[in-house]
Length: 113
Length: 115
Image (cartoon, rainbow over all chains, first blue to last red; front, side, top):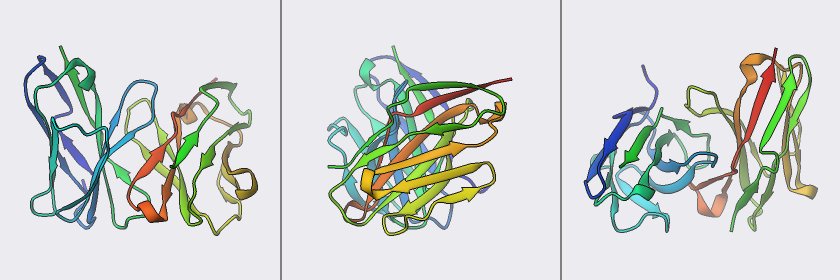
């Protein structure tokens, strides 16, 4: 399978715990994006990478959130001290260029109890 | 700031009817890109089409067609002879050339096609 993959698909955690999600983009894509989607809303941009460089972060990305793409391949998104408001679907996408279509993974659904 | 509005929250049609999903956008850039994505019940967003701001030609792909009008900042999507498998949430999105990489999505239109 050469699509975007995300792990885990579901995560249930208690408030205050840290969680980490992984995204593996399509191998030849140098752009990688993270979005958050809540029920009834469209995806909200969080951050994106060109190769290993993080080029933009949304204001939505508080200091509890951090993302990395250490070797320009897979990426991780960590949320520290989770809050109930962090419950959402976290989507990863990749693209071969900055202005082309994005290819989305299946998402990681986070539930914070 | 870029903004995308999909005023229709939900649409319900009977199979074989035509349906149009509206998308209105706001941007200050003269160069930008517009997209439509489909999110079926399985959840994974699927790319449908991309248009750049210099190409106002309408496009048809099978039962799908898109009408891009810069004068009204609209990029509408029509499904002809709808089918039950078309049932999904459809998102319109915008990327500005000066803010490459950041796509702004509308809140989506949920389309239900009944048999």
